[in-house]
Length: 416
Image 1 (cartoon, rainbow, N blue to C red):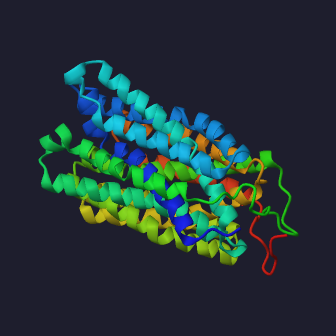
Image 2 (tube, rainbow, N blue to C red):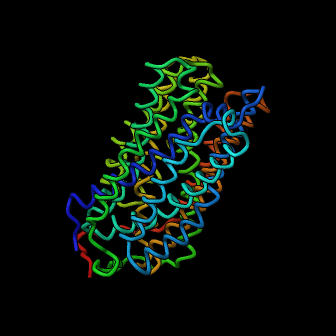
Image 3 (tube, rainbow, N blue to C red):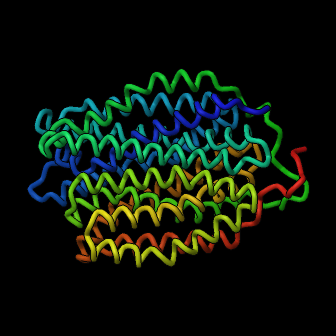
C-alpha cells in the first residue's frame, strides 16, 4: 500500500495544527501568566505560566500509551482522529477561559485541565502518525516522509510566529495581554474542522503495509532501540524547546522588542521547514547514522559561540542569525534520528513504543526545559544559561547516536 499525496498532506496538516496550538502557548507564556497567574513579580507570573505549560507534558506518556496502543491494535487512522479531536477541544477551552480577575482560582484550574488534555492528545499523536508515514513511504523515501513530522512542526512554529508578529505589530502591549493571545488560539481552532475532515479520508496502513525488515538489516532488540532513542530524542527535545524559548528569552532576558522576538520565531520556523526535508533526503541517500551524527557534532561546537554573540550584541541580527544557525543543524539531524528509531521497531509495537519513547523524552525534558532555563537564568544572573543547557542535551544525544546501528535499507534491496 502506498499513500497518495493528499493522504500524506492530511497527516502533515493535522500534525501542524496540533503543534500550532501547543507551541502558541509557549510563545505567549508571559501574557498567559499575567492573565491566569497574576503576581506583583513578573518573573513569578512567567514561571507559573511555564509550570502550567510543563503540566501538559505530564500527560504525554499516558497519551503515548493509550492512543499508541489504539494505533497498534485498531489502526493508525482512529488513533490520529482521536488525538486531533481532543486537541481541538482543548484549544477552544483554553482560548475561551475567563481570566483570574473574572472568575478567580477557577481560571488557572481550567487552564491546567486544558493543558493536561492537550498533553494527552499530543502524546498520542506522534507514534501513530510517524508509523503511518513510514508504512506509507517507498523504502527509499522513508527519511523524506518522516521529515514531514518536523516540517509540519516548524510550519506550526512559523504560523505561530507570524500570528504573534502580526498581533504585536498591530496591537499595543496592553491589547495583546488582554485578548490578542486569545485570538492566536482561536485562529487555530477555526481550522480544526477542516483538519478532521482531511484525516477522515485516510487509508489504514496497520494491516495493509508490509513489514519494514530488510534482508541484511541489523537485528536490534526493542529495549536497546528504546534506550538509544530516548537519549537521542532527549537531545533533540532540549534543542527544540530552547529554540522555542527564544521569543520569551529575547523579550524577558535580552529586553528586545516583541517584533524582534517574533522575528526569531519566524526565522526558526522557516529554517526548519527548509532543512528538515533536506536532512530526510540525505538520510535516504547516505544512511541515517552519518546524517544525524555530523550535524549534531557541529551543533555541539557552535552552541556556546552563537549565544555569546547573541548576548553580547543584543540585536535582531544576532538573535535571528543565531536561531538560523542552530536550527539548520537540528533540522538536518532530527529526521534521520526519528526514522532510525521507527524503522527499527516491528509493526505490532511501532506506534505505541515510538509514541511512549517520544512522549517520555518530551515530558521529562520538553516540559521542564523552558522552566529550568528561566529559573537558572534568574538564579545565576547569566544570560548564557540557554547555551549551556542546550550543549548538555546535544552531548547526550551525540553519545547515543554513535551507538545507534544503521537501519536504512541497503541500496538495491526492497521490502519482502
